[in-house]
Length: 118
Image (cartoon, rainbow, N blue to C red; front, top):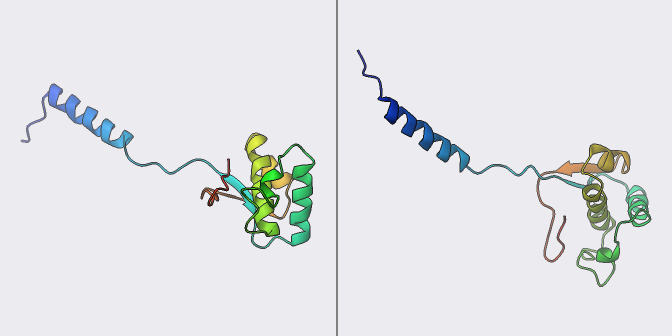
């Protein structure tokens, strides 16, 4: 018959297991709303105009801004769409409703160089 652990030893094992589990790396729960690769430029331009006319600071995508390069519609739209999404509660509506057929959520941080996505 196998011997059972003493209550104190059992408690130590449980505590150590809990500590180890709580220190395991956890995938980020943060998400970013960005342009779909298949989105049409016309839709992305509409998204840029929508974001800029609805309170989003568009200076980062101007020639002197941190997110100007690459100077592409998809890159500029992604930055602004995400800024809108982040500043409007990170809801599905703030990504998909306002940027129909052109937005997607990603858990991979799209920041690059000095262009930092919120």
